[in-house]
Length: 419
Image (cartoon, rainbow, N blue to C red; front, side):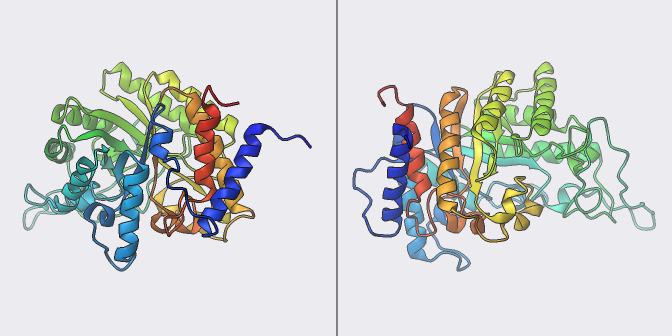
């Protein structure tokens, strides 16, 4: 049986990575790093947690020794970072008002990135998840005045059918008064101006709006509290406010499941509408939470080709490849369904299939010049939101897996000097 040279190189590389990971062979001192291997193509980034940003182990999840290793690996392999949680509304602005901010963890994230000369991303400003309920709540009525509970109006044009628990999703008090459009717009503007303004010139890219698209059905937008209270123009307003706060920042729209043709078309429809209105959407974030089973190389290539019709840079924002049995049937990334996607144990030949899928993905990324950033969603399997699916390039002890070597081999094969 004949074997192509590139496939032979991949198999050899996988074997070497297995030996390294098991301790049978030491990682060479001059082994290539991700950021160096891809320096002529795109930035290689990673989402970091609070322990990495602060250098302090927290809640007993990772020991101080492991945190130190996580930090060392982050510095060694990556030149761009995103905060996994600490810039989300519920953590940075948990209480109402100008004195309701908690900047400490976010400041540590920014300081870590600047100190290590990394390209900083801000994630995320407007999202239906991890937003405190006070954001959507209205002013209580005066004593003795009856104010009926909030009722969701009929969906506005473009509203989707993703309500979560009740018409306002998780966390909203459906039995209390809701904010008016004007109140919520003012809260959004104040929050964006404060957060983006604080890190102006330091954070270079912002996920302005996250996951606003409906997963299923004919409608374009998710039926979120932002849509219900403000209307479809909440997206345009968020980008407008972010651009006011930092005119030099790259502003991107971020969503998952864009490998699915129907959802991808919703994204294209939305962005074209925003472009027609001169809304400053400057990049497309495709999360790329995928599995070892899908998408195929051809499907990923088709997805990026269609996204390129928008004429914007493409950022792969939250890359991981789920190896759990449960994740092969459902490649979505709705956080509410995450537990189900990591059940059932790993698929057969998980390490080999993971390596093959990462090789295919990076081969496609390399052929699309529009791809400017590729960000892994977690430093290693041990800190991944899908830890049971073992979805990343490094194991929980920060050792490279066969998939790491496959990613390095992909760029070597892409080089014009490769044979």
